[in-house]
Length: 263
Ligand SMILES: [Zn+2]
Picture (cartoon, helix red, strand yellow):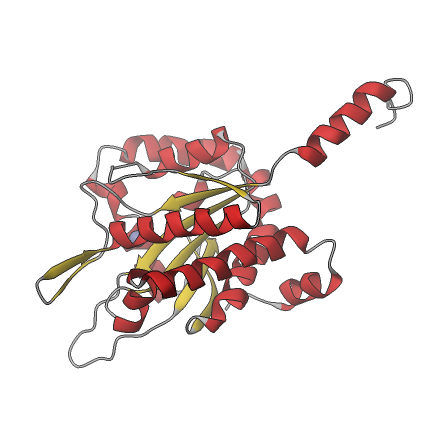
C-alpha cells in the first residue's frame, strides 16, 4: 500500500477489481456415480444420498442466483468425483466459500429412534467418537478407490498449507454458524461440529460440510425430496451465505456469528 501514491492508477484499479470480484460459492453435492453415499429402501424406491445432495445443490444455486450471488457446482450430474478433485475445482475457481452437501447416514439399530436435524462441520482433528465415526463414513471413498495415495500425498502438501487452514478456521466457523442459525426454521439445529473430513482439507477458502438431515428420518428426507420444502431450505442456506458476507458490515450479524460456538 505504501507504493500506492506512486502507482495510484494501478492501486485504484486493483482495489476496484477486488471490490467488483463476484463472491462465488462453490457447492459440492456429496458422492456421485458409483459412490451412492448412504442408501435406503423406502417402499419400492431406493433413496440415495448422491441424489438428495444434487437436488439440494441445484436448488441452492437457484436461490443464490436470486440474491445475485454466483455459484458453481463441483458436479452437475451423476458422476464420480474424487474428494481432492472437488476442492481442486473450488481452488481453481477461486471460490469465496466451499459448501459440501451430505446427508447423515446413521441408520437406526435395535429399536433406536432415528435422530433428526442438520449439523454443519468444520475441519478439525477431533477426539469426539461420533464425529470420528461420521467422518470415517464420509471419507470411505478414499479407502474404496485408488485415490488413497494421491490423498496421502496431498495431506503432506497440506501440512505446508497449515497457515491457510488456520486463517480459514474462524470464517469457516462463522459460515457454519450462519447456516445453522438461518436454517433452524426448517428443522432441528444440531449445531456446529468439528471433524476431519478430507473433502474440507484441500479447500483454500472458508469451508463447511453440511449434513443436511438424516437420510433415515422421514422428515429430513422430505425436506429435500419435497420441492416446496427444498426451496424453503435452500432459501435459508442462501440467506445464510448472505449473512456471512454481511458479517463485517452488519454488527448484529457479526455479533451473532461470533457468539455461536462449535459444540
Ligand atoms: Zn455423505
